[in-house]
Length: 218
Image (cartoon, rainbow, N blue to C red; front, side, top):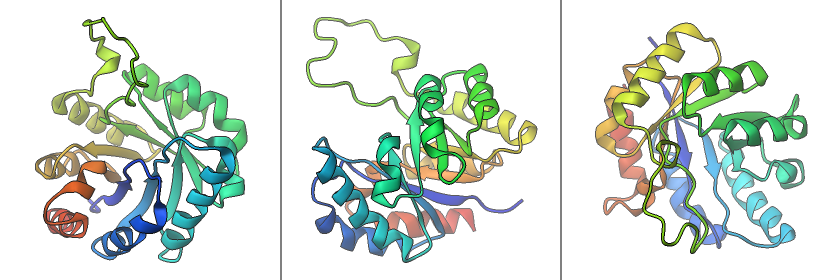
């Protein structure tokens, strides 16, 4: 079984130029296939400029760059595709991406959601990532947490990855919330391991985390 490749997730970026040195070191530390670019809120022109900056740096290393959402900006930003969270958001964005660009599906909270995304035309399906952060002040005064509002447990994620990898040809991505989860995710047959934005705040640096991940996957 071939070792999975890495899929890096950036922090929310306001100043991509300042981020590029860390990104360049990270991309050279392991077999990175793609970068999911998360952009802090800004006007459209600023978002496109930020995306172009990161895309140019990553694509020089033959690493694909996907925007987190913003499917309408992919072409103008020179990105390779977009990652959409939730089946409805994915279906709504599909016409903006296919067939030239990558359409990735995340936020699948059931096997049914995953199959629906695959049947609709997903180029990959991601399992195990946390839900997007709510906007400030959203849900104030509410203490109830729905199942879809939390990250699936590692056991749930492993189960879904194994099921998908053995049943469906469309690639799957397993989200690792820490270095300790990488080996278990890799054993499921996942095609890619996504390293969350936690890698950029690790004391040893993102490149060291990626190198350690690569050793586990070798």
